[in-house]
Length: 243
Ligand code: ADE
Image (cartoon, rainbow, N blue to C red; front, side, top):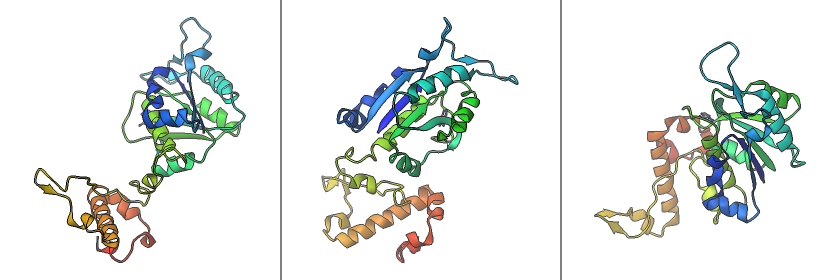
């Protein structure tokens, strides 16, 4: 997968080269290119923003600079990317979004700052047939899209084949079956007077699977009743319905 990021703070994306993502890049599974938006400015001040039409606080990112930057970055590879614009005004980014994007050959993230990017940049790209997703990582406002890109790229890249040591980890994720994951334990058997639940040491795989499912249902009911309510009836077995 090729990932391009356009930002006025390229250094902000440095953590993408650490840990799991860094290994995916080193292994050739991900090709990451971070671009400085100011490379496409033409004035001495390298201005990327201007006052909003209609008035109001904050600044809006200028369409000319973004238009040139997108054209140039798009031309670096023959594959058409999904263009992603992180914004608190976007559709929610979820595990389903991550799964969908993990199937793409190329992603291009356009990081806005200030009050956002002139809307015509997105309208123009869509008008040329390019797929553009405006997405939010949660109901809170960040200073810019960079931290959101770190979150989204990590969620997508860990789903790529060969990235996780054990692919079953992704299959058992919270959300992959619509439920939160239950608690996990490792050695020692007793720690500070607290014992690991007996059933997990029983070797009875059916009983362990049932116990895990019950804890997942219990936790989801307590912490995210909205997720439980959204589950289709067919996703629940007879024992599940007790919750
Ligand atoms: N930019 C600012 N806030 C954001 C959010 N919540 N999600 C994505 N991008 C953002």
